[in-house]
Length: 174
Image (tube, rainbow, N blue to C red; front, side, top):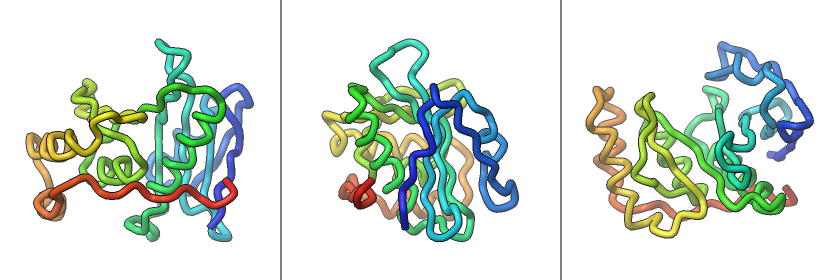
């Protein structure tokens, strides 16, 4: 698998994804955000991001999607880690992402993000890097999803989580 940065927000990259294979596919057509993809021959994951509107030193990851038949392989976590490393190399001091389910929460945690205790109006949990108390706040964040109606597999997923998972590697030579 190979990481590819298609461009930062100022570059205006666009990306067409198959809406039947990727969630949020329509969000990637816009040129207002930067884009990065993971390829395994074809695109298997994508992310859109831009500078935070209220803090120039923060990069905000807006959307992450992994092709439906490749979910659960850790690709999203590696993509997030690689983006945050690239952001740090561009002098961003902080990277944030808001997640809306326990599976996305786990993926962001594996990428080194930690729960901030904040929630957005869309019932999303805000996660940030660097995360000084990533391990200490992990259970608080994942348990917060119990406040919502969850499918049985999501509840079982939360039940199986005890501590913050180890942070994954970024893509080689990214």
